Length: 281
View 1 (tube, rainbow, N blue to C red):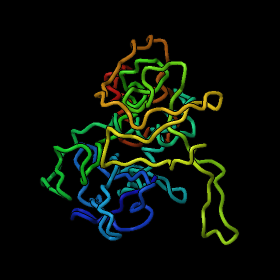
View 2: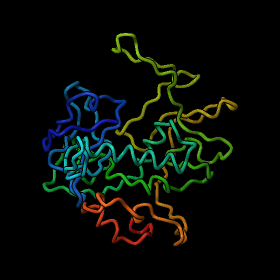
View 3: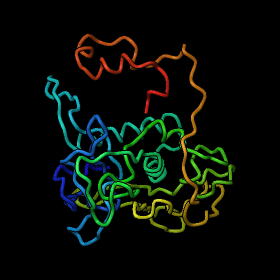
């Protein structure tokens, strides 16, 4: 995962590593009103001639609270947005531990569940895509939504992976997640990274935002070496809401807090919200 950079608002301003690399999951920034930040770098990547679409998703990155050297302040940047995506992945893995370490599946669920209602202060077209396209070179698939990533559906075989990210959506006996590279290592001079083939067939683990409905071939568990058909179905992902939790279950954000935390406006805003999923976008 990498921040898109803070060189916007012009097109093709995603121009520095690691955001330019195909393997990176790139994050742009929005403000608190879901408007694309003017500084958030846009795609496509042209510095290497690839024309690679960027970013993948966006997350809040304007006026974020942070602690530095014992002091609290507000900061803006795609580096503030990126941790939100890491947090969304952590929440996803905590609810669905079978996804831990499965980067391609995690990327797919976060991307496909992102909300495309990101606003722009000035409409743009970058690399032939506008805000009405999904993904696009402005805010990618959209604003991340951890709740929707967890509850993305339909999931016909009930294996915990939405059909749009499952290469075997009708086979509940197989987890059917994309194979991941293993045995990651660094050379002695820390300049070269190595890894084993992504799967026994030697297929590279790779995803592309240019074809959101097509994801890499995926492997079955080691006990069943058969391969899934290439690509995922073209099912349209939807949100599947569970039954609202009983009121007795505690919302951590509404619980007692240290005095220092109560000073911040973000804390005050959260405390006034009812502990129901309808207010947790």
